[in-house]
Length: 415
Image (cartoon, rainbow, N blue to C red; front, top):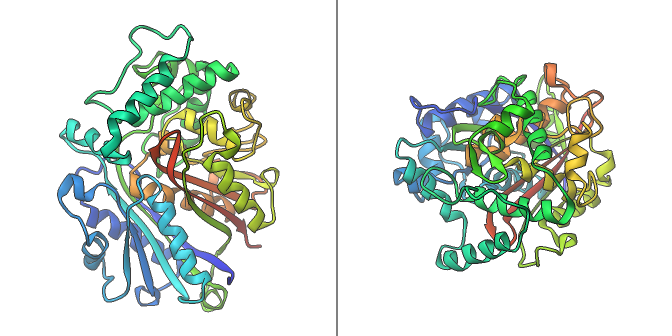
């Protein structure tokens, strides 16, 4: 495999863009990534376009990338449509990397765009059920309900539950969180500390959906979604687009004023039917160890990470699975300040999904945007000092007790 570099990144603010279509959002991200990389549209040889909900919400299936990108000036070249739930952006990036690493292309594009917010709230949240095995949804729900029923934590009587006003994934996260609390003694306050930290980070991020700080007390007092998760502990619904241009070393030499970031490892995988207790088989553990091996580094070498936190408990879990702390210690690790900017292992300096926002098909590429910005030392007030190694973890969908799909990438600063 050849060396591969990120030549440019670009994104919109993640927000509720009621006046913009997916075509509009894709064009903004495309225009910005081309300028950032210093390339022409004609330099791009192949594209991977990530989107999850355009078909369900608006009826645009099958040729989403071709429809979205032609008005922006991209046509005639290979455009592959990527749909991998919340891991779509990461999946698109992996294949754009693979196209260059294999020697097939010199310059490729990964781009994701999503219109997640709908006026019809019931339809909007119903769309999340497609991230499960729909033919076996009833059995899946029974399995999760049995998990919740087995937990004896003094759970409030009005603990929330699946409904028409939120994603069913929050019930999955809350069930896993309750299990972790019972097994390891993790507290609701520790989960709130993670949420407060990420809202603090996003207050310095102009691309974030939420840019307001929130105290731990405010987060604990907020409306309950599914105990122990309150609204600020859960990713919002929103719209946005993000993109990355990757290229070979030879192509990079042709660029003027290049600010490249090297892709040290890119790994894509799927979940297994492991027992919940078999944490040593966790998908993030498996894939990250493979990525660490390819990159020749360990978790202790990473300076900053963007992890998939559709809920704040998701971040807690991933810090454990990725090896930043031991299983069972994620809550205490966050409470110590280790994952805050200036701490031992800053996590989600963008604000993460819960505060930067989570337009599904674009989220994984939003992570790449943040980490490239950090590795270029261009993150301003949220800059991690001496940042030279970064990791992105982006999961999607759910089967049994873990993500159905996941991508893990390790990126390095080029001095």
